[in-house]
Image (tube, rainbow, N blue to C red; front, side):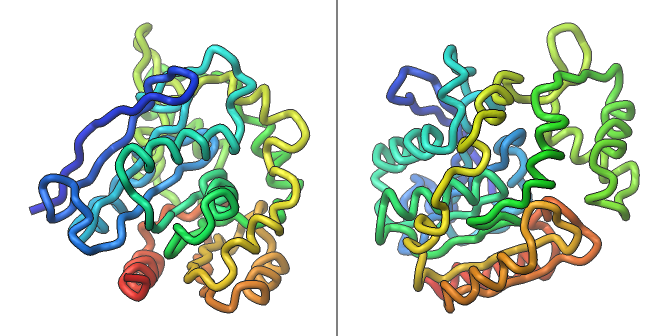
Length: 292
């Protein structure tokens, strides 16, 4: 039987009602049952639905927690857009982990979620037992940041799901040159919702673009220092071969600084791989099994 999840909520230190998907794993009460729990952290404009297939796969044997960061999915939007920063997201997730009594865990972080993983390792030394970094590293290519800045917060909407899928294909076709309409539709339904006026729009607060445009928020300074906190931690680095955010040179430097890192490159994909690719899925399971 496929694993199922529960919609749960926690409260941030500034009073926001934040949502997460809780996949209890084989133990119905959500206990660890001796297996390393996994926390999945999504990218800038994404949400918990991004990890649906991966979380179902992992939850066959372990607990999986997938938060919607503030301003995304079912989590509250912040009154102050200045709180839309990686450090604030890390504080939100740390509060959730504390409330759940989780002291040792693995992280799967896509893009911004990978930045969070590095910051969490520095803020919570020794607690992260394994990490998957999806198309992100301590150095972020300015070309990729410029591309993201060109679409984040624009608030486009579409009359039908097919229009939404075609809009995604137009915006992100260079990163997924082999995608067909069905795959773009699947991505649209992970990233968008039907709004009250019946149109289809992105499932995040457009105000996240405001702090993203400020220096030091898109890619926090001194990330190599944060990465050093992961030295010796078993790591899987996933890179899209067409990525404009993570360079091959940065991958090499990361490997030299953390010999416990294994890298997998996904052909014909840019930023970011879905983590549903067979070679990536197998590598994630192997990493977690070895880290028990």
